[in-house]
Image (cartoon, rainbow, N blue to C red; front, side, top):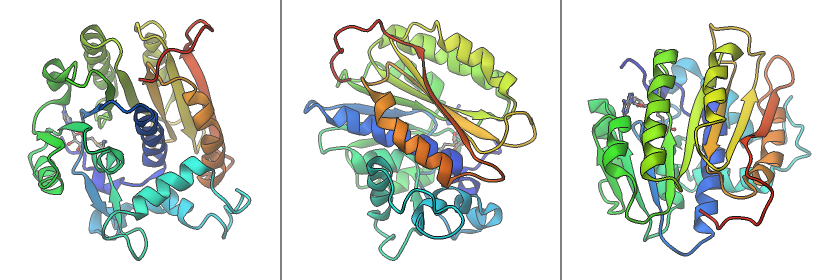
Length: 299
Ligand code: SAM
């Protein structure tokens, strides 16, 4: 358990993950009934971009930093404006108390979800690392909608699913310290979760270093039992080196209807904004596509 998200908060992979998260929470809000967000690997909740960890890597500057000034510099290729979903997401970050004079604090997935949730929605956050869990608790000490659990997020799913709201989202965002083992844990957890709560929306973030490391998981998703599985990927470098993070993806099981349409323009814009040595590549496709029929109800 050496991973600390503070070194990576706001990097290009976080941008993809959190933009998809934002679209998913918006889709859940399309219906008036309450929903639950379950974050199995929550992190510490909020990260100082001028803190020593974030400054040490500077990763956020090549991530969310690129969106702050899309109209200037070598990456000014969006025609001066961000697509509405990206603008809405960025405005959400800037609305965090402490960010009145620019993006100083980067909210992690649980805080981004909580900021977008309504009064009647709820969140269950799991974080195994004691110090990270303590910080997370501190972030949400006054928020009665949010419950923090210092425990294994995969194990916790057995107790937390299905949520009483019967509607909602599970985010699985582990550190992948040992890749193969992590995919095994994710598959086990998803199998159990889908059996207990077949209609939940499940979003899984995955790193892309060597393409061949991800393929078995993507193949597994193709027959995991979910009605629809959407894959959104952004690659800032070719996926041919095991030594560095070249890109990342989000797989969304039981994806909301038309999520692909919602994400298409934002992904296209992110590929332009986050490009590094060469044009970035993106993919958005269905690994499992429901028969074209009447749309099923919003999640
Ligand atoms: N989801 C967060 C976000 O987007 O802001 C970032 C999470 S970070 C990638 C992964 C976190 O999982 C780390 O804080 C780590 O301590 C925690 N962790 C590792 N193994 C875990 C487990 N089995 N259960 C719960 N948390 C775990």
